[in-house]
Amino acid sequence: MSEVAQTVYLAGGCFWGMEELLRQIPGVLATEVGYCGGDVPNATYEIVKTGHSGHAEAVKIVFDPAQVSYRHLLFEFFRMHNPTTPNRQGNDVGSSYRSAIFYTDDEQKRNAEEVIRTVEKSGEWQAKVVTEIVPFKAFWRAEAEHQDYLRRDPHGYTCHYLRRLDLGEQGA
Image (cartoon, rainbow, N blue to C red; front, side, top):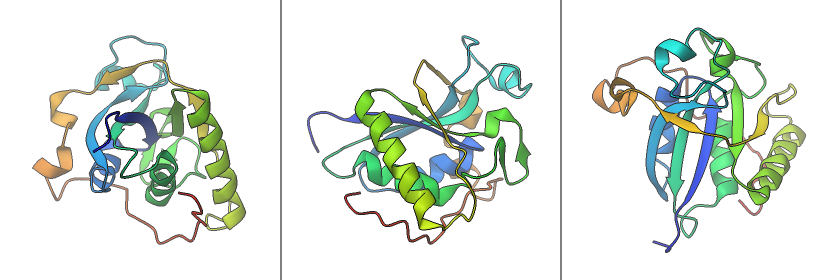
């Protein structure tokens, strides 16, 4: 393990399914579900589900960059959700289910922009990517019942599945 773990914040619909898929990637050290991207402090599920908080359901991913790159995590992110549907993933509809990358520095932003260009050029989604690239402001940890949900209830609801995409992951 490298000395310095890094963190990325991603939103791609319901956080339960994303968390379960992300934690299976070698090099991911920890995941936590919560709310990101809005202006309401101390966000809760009850506040976010109204759609008036500006927050998205998101996953905080702590990873070892010696084992997995930020770019590779982003390519995996684009395999596990549909980045072409604004404010929607499967049956989940609303701004809290939008696709977003919350960057913490200029390098993360640049890499996110490059990965999105690669995804769009691939033609795999056959529609324009609407994923937001926005500065990280704050992450509010979701309630205990949302953490590790699919580990506790393996047959629980999810709209996330890995697609077999050829996204040209050079340098990922």
